[in-house]
Image: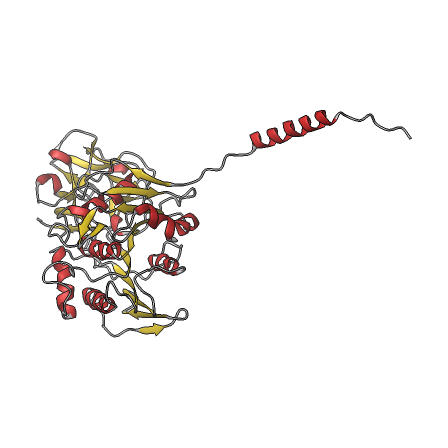
Length: 443
């Protein structure tokens, strides 16, 4: 039998190394999402830091979660030690991790939930900074302003409730872990109040607001030696009153050993009692319940009741077009009459640059002879004013659900944020509050 000549051992090893090197060179490099600090995200009166986690796989119009640490904590630790990051990877939503910097009662890195600025809509401090972070994600990552939520532990839980009270036009729901009711750390303190009195604190944080109120899922341990367990019932009293539902739970269940879940109304408020737990929430598995409550896991959460839209005006009607999500009006910047001026949201003031006339030709006219005009037919097409010429891109359907759809595109008038200066665009109709509008008179 003839044997094949043997290769030298060194040559074999060299060939194997070359082959393996080639395989490594051909293998794709995995992209790993990480927590990133954002330097300039907008108005930041609280002078706090923004850290952002965008998973490798993001849904086309991702929901936004603000996740906040407790006093003496750090955003990076809350990112590492909680399950919101892995749930973001799984479901494709974006997570904002703010870094607090205030001092209170000998503690550091607390969120401001006590100053006059922090306790009212548009007042300033950390709440305004966090809303700026949300607007940044809406604008830079195509975040869905109709799916913005908040959660946090201890000081972060307090800020969660604070955001629900002061910015119900931005946040749709919140899940505080070991927190207190809104206004508890302001005067006159956390003493006993009636549900009506607790609810009035929330209503007074944004006087005149008539839109839907955020839902609440509150968690608390019975052995919490930092924030007493009684705070849970105060949160329930406050938000059941705000939603106008009974303080008697509609159902009481035990999702797992040691947990008691109470549901109020049709799901506007949920309260979780954790037997024997101290000041150390959330435990493993709890974050998933919060994500499900928000609907960020792909399920449909129970919606808050929404106000009945203003009846559709008849041709010849004249008035302001006000966003349901923002409370702000469709506005022509600086009353410009130049063709191509991009429209925006702005505080309603009744000026002629905010007064629109619906014509029998389905036009929305402003400033004498300018029409609301779509500069394209796809998602993201800008909305501008242009000399009226009768094109289909200048015709609009004012629907009974409050949406305004372009006749040419079939897409809806959409606000990609809630703050002053937010630009308007076309986007696929989904019925979110950022696509619903009311027609009214002067501000």
